[in-house]
Image (cartoon, rainbow, N blue to C red; front, side, top):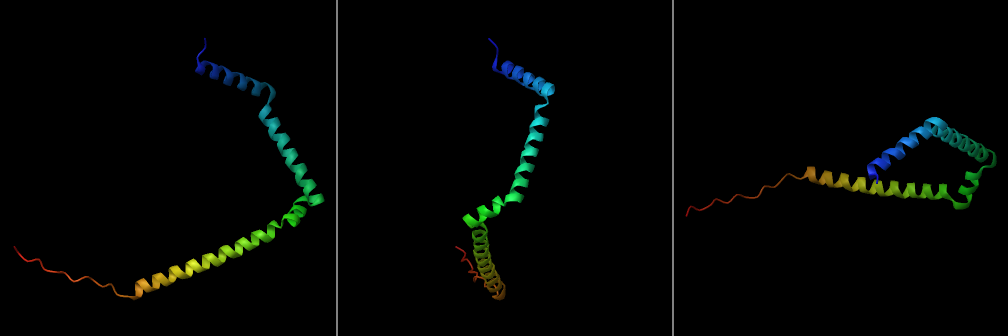
Length: 103
């Protein structure tokens, strides 16, 4: 009976041999590149993403979210500046120190 490590090492060795013999990684990358380029060209010719955006109104929603985010950011920034201004404009008040009575 083989150990799990031995089986894993054997499987890895076979995978390396297979890769060296058939050059699978390069061929897979080339096929992926061709597929992506083809889909990009089809999208440019037929405007799939524009049509999808038109139906789902993604751009409008993104702009709306951006506007809401900027408004919230401005409100928070304004509040932080206000708190900083208040904190720096008032002099620090120290608590009176009480003298301890000797017992």
